[in-house]
Length: 154
Figure 1 (tube, rainbow, N blue to C red):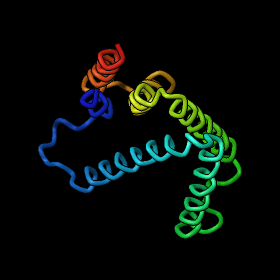
Figure 2: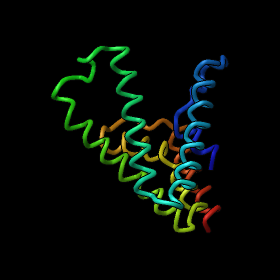
Figure 3: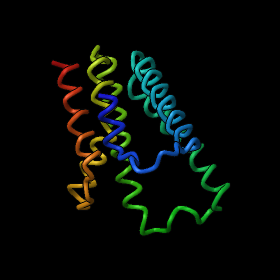
Figure 4: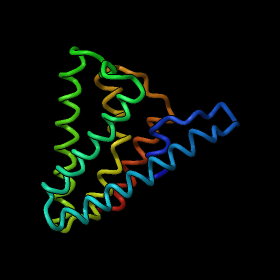
């Protein structure tokens, strides 16, 4: 499954040089996402809504402060970006609540496996909605990731 997820993100097979900074950032992101999922599951045992609400408030403050520090008060992209930002926020909140609920109801193993597929779905939606070309390595990655999930769950 992990090989499929890596391939679905479309690594460059032409270059023999490994971009160290990109790999370090990817490892940092993977560790951070893992910690978020673990702490969400732990917090959801008490209250899923309180856990997700607290996470979103803290993330909003930290991200907002970072954005203002880098771009100033007008760095949000203007009013035309607001509907898209609200939709993204609602989707993120809904997915976090669904994960917290599933984790607190004893389905953490299946929930973790399925939630790790988000890069695969990102690639599939880009192909379907934006008509992006799906290179052979990405197509193989999508198939491998779903096959891995079928083997783990089945």
